[in-house]
Image (cartoon, rainbow, N blue to C red):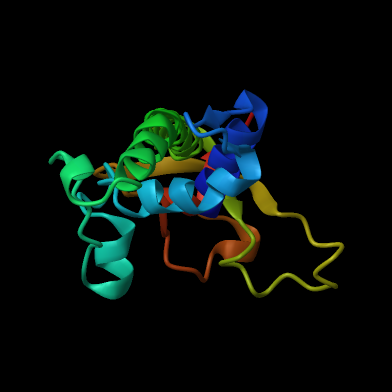
Length: 179
């Protein structure tokens, strides 16, 4: 969420959005931040299906963007122009941020494909009988052979020496291919 807000503020600054009203007042990028925040908080997020306002406070601000506001208050047309101008870049940037975050997450969270007989290394997080300081300890132990596969979640290994007293099944998050 912080990354997305950071991206949106960067795009707001980079695009140098300027809104000029007929009576001469001009908004620059820093005066648009409250409108930017309002649009962000009232936009439905793809991940949750709800708005940040609903998740944080339990209610959404009531915005009358669908009706003709000029009849209600003459300055409301300038507010509507402001929100309309800001909402498109915000929604576009939110979509881009969601896609970018999803690609990064998917790239780093692929489950590796293991086969019987593969050589793999086990993380030393599960091994507490190796002597020495943590700084000097290797992150993975010696290679072991896969004896059995338990779905895609865990592997059973032929353990030797240091780990022979351990239970031979390990989750795939704690093992990696030996290359």
